[in-house]
Length: 131
Image 1 (tube, one colour):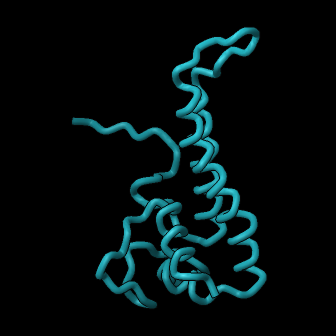
Image 2 (image 1 turned 180 degrees about the horizontal axis):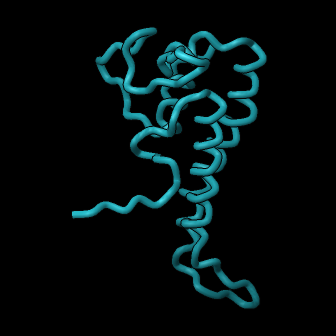
Image 3 (image 1 turned 90 degrees about the horizontal axis):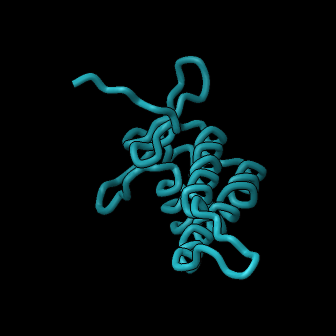
């Protein structure tokens, strides 16, 4: 069974807003996933009814690396003041590159769970809006 922190982190990594005092359950949630023909389930239901092997994949393949990737984005800020040092040259795109990799893994986690990436993550494509 995922911990409350892991449930919150999956929701956050998936791009969905925090729950706060809102109750998410088997019939109410901001996030739904299509799991089979004609069957939709809430993100909350999907996460609280994982098989042991699915939970292991979610934690070991997605959550644990996502924590590391997220920390690396913050850590990249330490290099922003250096453009070149001796023979070492700073990757000016480091933060963007790390963010892109982080977001790719967040989307992969969403696909594994069976829910679309949330509003703060999106599908990674470009959207054209006519005004």
